[in-house]
Length: 366
Ligand code: 8OZ
Image (cartoon, rainbow, N blue to C red; front, side, top):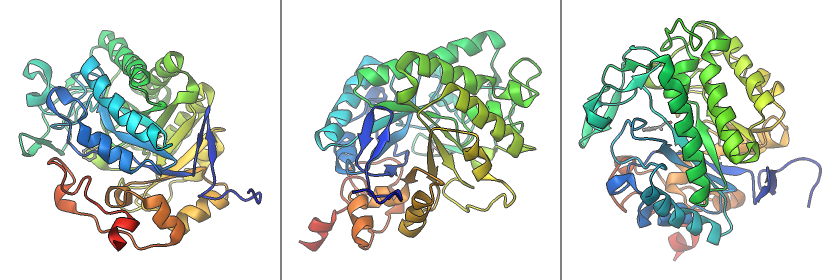
């Protein structure tokens, strides 16, 4: 059935796959990977429970051993990790769902205890973030990073490319490049963290160079139809800022339009917080510059999500916290049913509790 007006609950063609609806499970860090940062059977159960999402984007996942910033977050660069993820993708596909893995390098948001040889975290510039990470069971200040030598940058781009190839080996339908929330790509983009004076710093074009190289490498490796990217132009997450984000992110939108990844995933406002943190910022101006699929996120409820899809201002809407506490969120939104409450004490780390034990509607009624 198609009335001409797009609906949240109708299928959507994303590249070569057809999503059963326009509701996306946003990437959500849960810190439950096993030894070797390998996805566990519990993770396969968790993602499998949420397969009615039109698309699942996994939790942020390291592309290499320098990419980690928190304990127990998974990787997608070893064969053991690929095997662990294979169980996850099989569980989601068995239920008719689709799943992309989010490819992540934390850059300066890390701690020496997580870095190879206890070395300093890597970043565009040696500017420490005023933010905390989660290591050894508790919160700790991030360490001062070391500025990447220009000769080292192609190696990091290549790590993204190799992780994308591994993702397809693991059975993912595609990847989402994590360009948001103050991590490495965002650190290159925004001038609060990028103080470089070489080809990767200074002008908007130069600060966008790393993002452009990563997107080009990944799309060449696995195809633009399997490559999405997430950006967060104004979020203060992880102590990142920019002196003039509007022209910077309009340029980013232009670059992405040229490279043609299958979607752009936009966090509107402060990640997980207020949408209007920078009241003058024009998000619609970015969408107007980009011809592909537009995914929006941040504080959407059913009414807002239905309206944004019906208006054509977005094609897909990503839900975060509500997907943690409601494995059957799509069904609940469709029926206008009540939502389970979020258990905030078990978001990060631990086992089954607050992870795979949220009831679906039928179970709740039984
Ligand atoms: C919450 C805790 C740790 C990491 C992000 C990957 O904000 C994250 C993250 C979120 O994108």
